[in-house]
Length: 243
Image 1: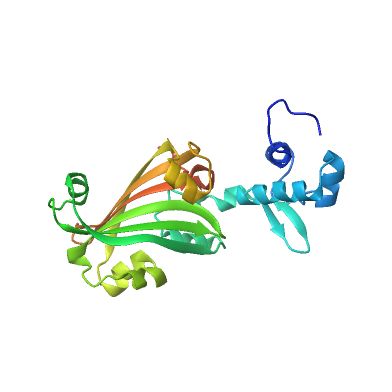
Image 2: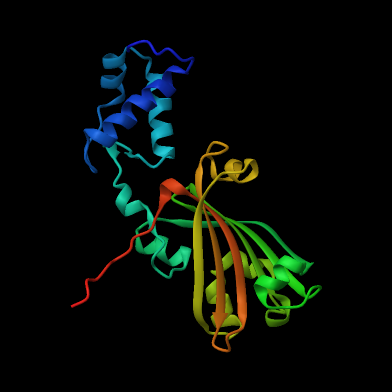
């Protein structure tokens, strides 16, 4: 392997080299060289090569299949289209990925001025606060901080959230039909706590999302602030030319 001026672990150098090849030479679905071939080609130990491939898998650039080898991932299929109104759980399943939700916090709080303004309630009203880590195929994808009005979901308990998607709970358990969800997003950088949960570097690019969900009575039933990995989400817009 050609020497690199900066001080960088050997496996990290190999990650950079293979990332470059994945982006400019390989196609989705291509079989990558084996660990032995990479070891011989770059003069590295098998352990170093294995660490590099594990990092590429963590980044979603490759898929490793036992007994078959390592394949270039189709990232266009993996990324989540933010244009679609979606349930994270349902959309991941539709994509053939295995969704997982880890509840980091579920508690009650009093609405402060900021929350009250965004939820259309009064300062001091009781609010459920829910913090979740959303993952797919074991990869952390998004950290969500959700606020729900206690008065509309008085019997909501943490075990319900651990076994059922939030929107299904709202509609099936509380018989409150969702009418529309407004969502806006903007580019940002990962703050330390979120970066740790998402498995990315501090100041790595992320998308901050703000979602407000209304029921059929036009009452706000959910206000969610999310931080999503920028490499796992996309936004697609269709423009139709007027006749």
